[in-house]
Amino acid sequence: MGKPLDGIRILDLSAVVSGPYAATMLADQGAEVIKVEPVGGADILRFLGAGRGGMTGTFHLVNRGKRGIAVDLKTEEGRDIIRRLAAQSDVVLQNFSRVRC
Image (cartoon, rainbow, N blue to C red; front, side):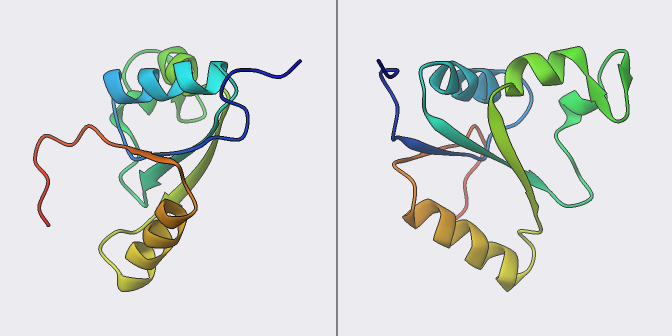
């Protein structure tokens, strides 16, 4: 028997704890979650606290069960990648403090 969210794709653009943890709970329920981090400016949670190899236990806790990709959103190619991923996703999750369109 499958999980409740099998077949659902989530594009996770969130950072730190609240957004990534919400996406992790969706992954725990069977959703395919794709975590997007900026090139050269990874999620700060990777470095807060004790860790090894650029990852802390807390980062692992709130990002378990996800696939990851680094994208440079400052380039047209990077924005194109996100547009394509968003078009193929059922949900786009973000926790930006300010969104500019």
